Image 1 (cartoon, rainbow, N blue to C red):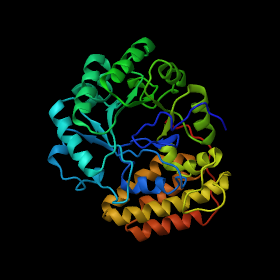
Image 2 (cartoon, helix red, strand yellow):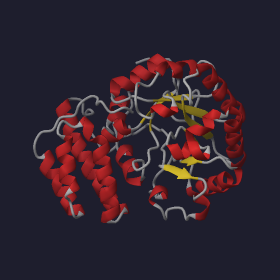
Image 3 (tube, helix red, strand yellow):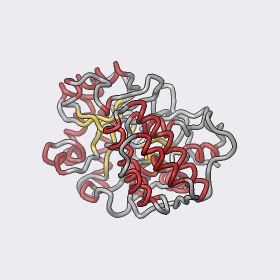
Length: 353
């Protein structure tokens, strides 16, 4: 399928990204075990970039990398672009140094977090209230980084397209290598529909790549966003954690080789996807057991099920089963019990992305 976008012509990272889908940074979800589960479904000859959970530039300088759940990484992981939260130069500088030493190939600045604490302390989406200061935060980061710097942002605090375009032009001039736009204003959080038209309008006004984000739940949504907006890549959040084989499906349509661990065609029917959810969940559980104590791993596994169960026909029952588990063995048995019967996945849910 011709998309009108050459992913290698404008690489997001030095060395190139040749695949148009990436995982979104999400608190409680984009940890080392979930990244391993999603990465397992990447086409064998495809490359993209990989996020972390949001990391605080005020805490990182005092932490030992790998000593916290958020900074755990597998030795074999590549293409990591951790996301930082911050607005002061010295904490940003120290954080960037640590992250590059840890293996980061890029740094992403969070200008999209809509929680009230971010507004109160002038970081996250609050930075979108002052385009000059936001651009200076990018300059601070670029000065400290020997790797590309990107920005993930929302449509701002007000639905003002002219301001948004001025804002992203300022980020571009300050040295951002690409931006990711989630076209909802801050106060909407996940409510309402993402306005994809804003992604196209921003894409037409700046020279650096634009990654689109928001309301992408399945294969058709990925290609609809690429075609409707002209964006350079698509970032997917909870829906990609729910159906990580979406990467396989996209690769199949674009002519990439299947993931190294799989043969045949990607799951496509509701029943095939239901079965694959069970297999993916068992793999995730094994990765959680490898990296975390039961208390820490079970908390993350339950959160994963709670965030993804909306795509499963009887997801509430699965959540009930895993909530009662007292050990990793119990969690595994709960999964085997639930998926011993045929399960179906919906192409989309009422949950907003």
